[in-house]
Image 1 (cartoon, rainbow, N blue to C red):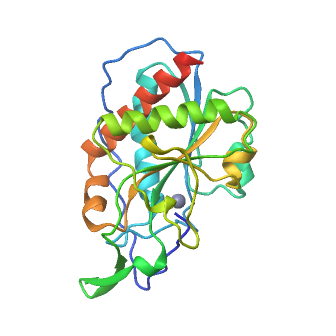
Image 2 (spheres, protein in one colour):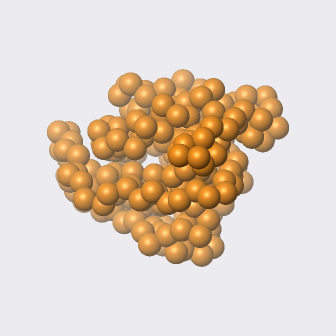
Image 3 (tube, helix red, strand yellow):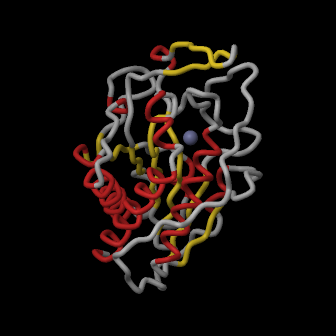
Length: 246
Ligand SMILES: [Zn+2]
């Protein structure tokens, strides 16, 4: 997740904006539940470049939009941070988190640099790796609500797994930059204590790497509306579960 790949000549491929919101059958009255969805990265610093040169920020923004639609359909109070991609400091993202049920930061993943290879599309070189795919979930011991954070991280990871997604094991690998201890191995939850948004949130906080966009096959799936809807439904099911338990 920490690898930023700079590729000369990569154009921005912007996803279409209009799409139907996913429908979730598990209706529940949850108007007292407030979830903040954080769009990872910014227009100026868009994170990882996908195997086909699409900035991570665009994947994050699209998935947050779909997820917000699903949660609003379930009567969650839902707010989106960094909708315009112009937010400044990381700490600005968590400024209004006091009293919220959960802060959920949405990202898409890469792999460590030694696993990246090059390929060309239309004469433009892009970095890719098909070695890893799948989601990862992160929490911090330093968050003021570590138990609640873990409960929701596990519930989201479990719901993703039940929906057919698989956790990536890349972040547990004993290599430089990784070796992140598991908080809940079966559901793909790791500790990443010093992630600013996790430790500085004033409410339970979780970061989701929804999938590996440098993987050529997974990138295609993550760009599809049905995959985004399935991830969003799993997030909603996870939240229904962990917040019910709370
Ligand atoms: Zn990211």
